[in-house]
Image 1 (cartoon, helix red, strand yellow):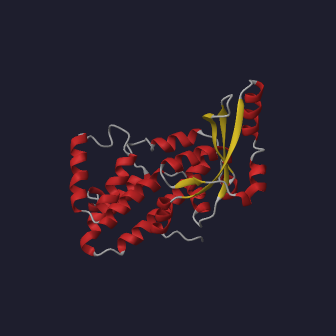
Image 2: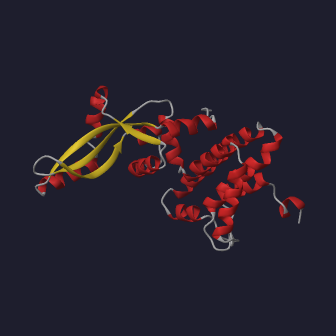
Image 3: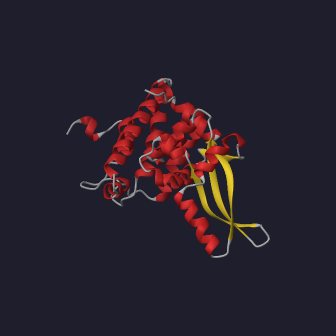
Length: 255
């Protein structure tokens, strides 16, 4: 066995973690789930392409760092990715306390840029290919109409949200599963990469088109039949400050 195989570099470790190497015969959990879904092969192909591109961008940034901090930065990124892809007992048998001590040791020595790279790599690793497309669509600072359906009390007071994140950004971005746009946006919002803003009255026509959404209309009709009042709340979707910083840090350009 070659020396590189016995003692892989930290960058090789980062690449292997991103690729999801696991126990013999077992792929990453996400890969196994995707394989069972309709169109899963296409989604996985997109995921591999996005990860390869982003890792290339990260490596380019690492290569520009001075040699003294290069190895430490690779260690931060590698550890971050390994922590996210670990899911099988055979993958990492270290005690949680040992892993925490390693994180604290790295934290005491890393630079601000290294901490930023580690955080951004964790965000990117968590993205689905369609979510990366949505982030790309809003990366230029543009906004998209978004509506939420809420239930009202008899006094006209909002009681709860019935349906969130009906938005045109999925189709505009060319995602493979436009029907999953609501879920994609929920995940992107939870990660802090996109956010909503007040209604844009210049988008009135686009709001009206959006409000013909089949799922939205069905729920409105069901609530009406049940004697429950509802209201559509208009918002806009836009990239957040964190999302903008992530996009700029990766220096992604269109081919």
